[in-house]
View 1 (cartoon, rainbow, N blue to C red):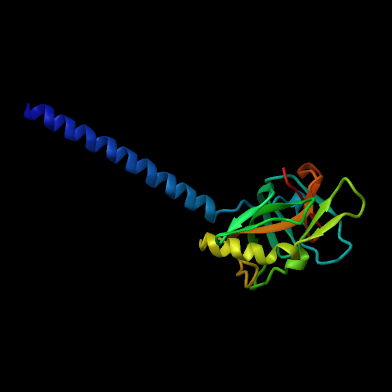
View 2: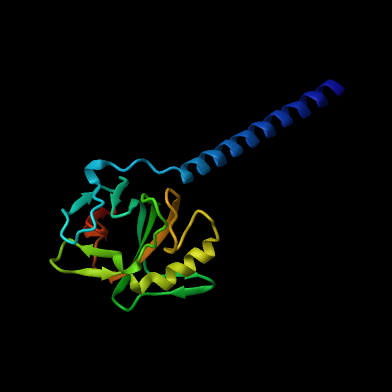
Length: 193
């Protein structure tokens, strides 16, 4: 009877130890992935600050340098409402939100601020349809505050080499299709899926 109890306790300990190791290794893997951003693909990178630089189309999930930053679109989603700080925010009637999660690294040698007016969402199915990020800035700052995660950032004081996540939010007509929208920063056009 004592041997059976000892075997049961030992087996329970081994199972709990195995689960703990799995959780810890999963957590370590997530932390490493959060700290790591692949090197930008030179094929999709343009650090030129010239307004008429060659336009580069960046496939979803690729890392590209645009101006002083390396960007990677992690996810993009359509939202009919956003719940943050116990409030529900909705777009104007006939519109929807496009929420984009980015991984960003300052690839310069100095601390730089990202300016929200440099972010644009372009609808490639129309000739001149562009959407400004201004409308979403205050809501994104609330989302970042609620995330309360040091790996997320607003757009102020981006230190060299540091990798951070952030969100950008746009309001677009509800007829807009994610397949037709590209996130624009500098001369780079990032596909959203």
